Length: 72
Image (tube, rainbow, N blue to C red; front, side, top):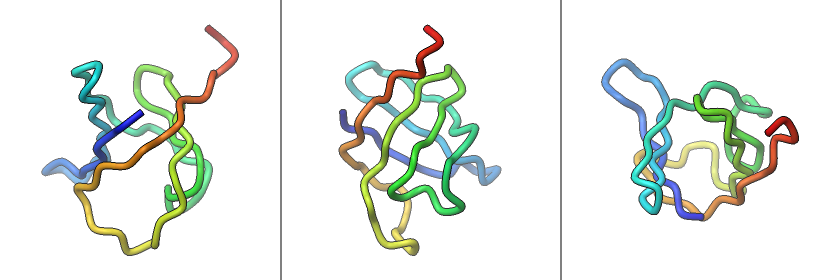
């Protein structure tokens, strides 16, 4: 699924999913730098992000895989 990741004016990381017309804050990451790890959105959805350079500039659109959180 394509998602766009950006920082808002306050520095909060946000993920926008164009197919769902949904924007949610990124509330947790499994790695210090998000690339190559799981991120969790404010609505509970989790995505596996691709490996990318730590200094990748935002905003960026990536192909991410949604991971079942198991709780829903």
